[in-house]
Image 1: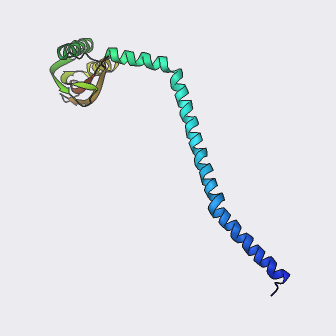
Image 2: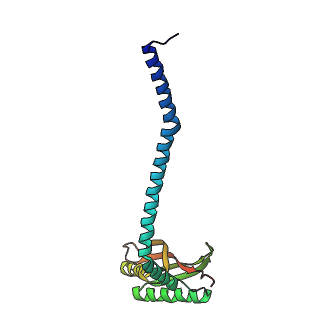
Image 3: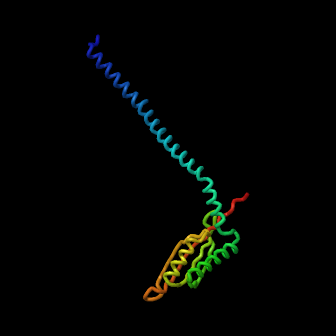
Length: 177
């Protein structure tokens, strides 16, 4: 039972097609996926390397900024921290000519490596004194963050404003040596 030449060519072509299909499914496609995954990983590692190099170049500046933040953070001593903030608030109020009506401190423990001292302040003044007071808070070197600000008018013309501010002071827990 001899195959004719045409039948042999068809059988050979079918076997070659099956072998190529199996080779593609079992060898070529998985290799392409692995190469693609490795290329993405290499690209990610190169980006991480570039980011690390930039951080190393900026290490001294970052260390200076961290030391500065640690120095500007409030003291671990509760009385000293409150006194520092109260002195700053009195300085801001006198520089801005804002009439303070109340100031209430409260301690918050939100993280294991830091605490916050929250203050609620209300005062009154004209537009210039309110804006100057807010400017003084924002530009003070202490580690202070404005959380909430509410400004309302105390008269019909809006010349006398009432300011209600909530701000927090940061206390970093020092690492044990």
